[in-house]
Length: 462
Image (tube, rainbow, N blue to C red):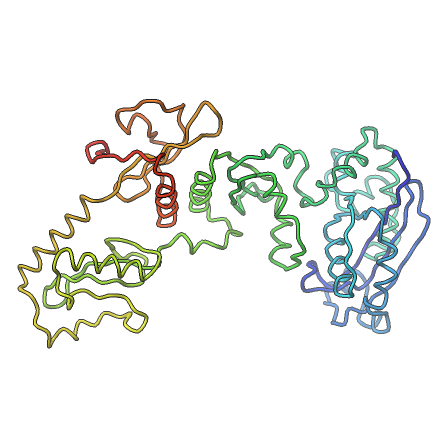
């Protein structure tokens, strides 16, 4: 240690395992000067709610024991002053820290601190142990715990562990951890080495659990910064805490551009459907233009809500966009308005009966117009190749949009000249397109026409 510092070694007992829906029942704080403990603080806390029986069995703290204990807000000032200006130390530091940040804030105190996690430090300074739980680690290092799962007993054991860590820290792990401190914002199972290899470039990242299963996929302009952002903030809800606790490793793939990152993220989510990726409805279109025959044999066009499994001529993000498209077709091909249904919330269902009193066009003439319309839509499908920067100066990214669908995207050696799209597109880059992916490609192409190479039908034939 280069200069004197004070450490607050803390252990708490609680009514449950996430701060958003639980309360503290006991707290112990040991002030350590880097050589020894110089001050102790301990109190039971009335959580103002029943303690679950499983927790009572684990800790021995009952409802009767805390009935006359102070509320947290009554001891918050003492705790705040004890912790203020100290480096916060705990075994699995995120758990204790999150609870105290929340409880202090509810009592009117804004508090933040540098953190040290004795789990992380032990993995570096005492490598090779089967388990780094406090009980197993203390057993291996012959540290006695007088009252396991009680705040003061665990805090004193953590203080002894901290003493050993200081004594055996031959490579200045503690000093380095204090200097960086980013490490102690990471989930306890995610190593600093894994995080530190993340690039500060655009791409996607994948969080995995202890079995290697992908549990979350995200995209970023700066991968390292975005990953760290997941572990900032004060969200203490159960779902977030479970998510953080599950993360054991992180992988990444660079993309070169944000557009490629968006496509790679969507493709990876569709492939693995990670349990913590919730915003998946954005990948589905909301409205569709459909073609069907009514009971009289008339071909009809209608705008409706998009439904899974429906055969549709076009998909749209908004009803207005879909209605305008149908209106243009009606005018261009001289269709009868009685056989075209525009979307409005009040008329979502098809109402073929309302045409019974309307004079309808000749059936064959109308069918011919519909066939002409369908042919028009088919031959006017868009095909283009979008060339953009790659992951380094020696390559380009490409996106192949074929007949109104995203067909492939990937990376190739620097593109200078090409005669056929097949010279660029790799079979392994073919993708399963969806509406969301198609829309972001079309929007980007509209904003950057200089990167778009329009393709005639002859160049897109398979």
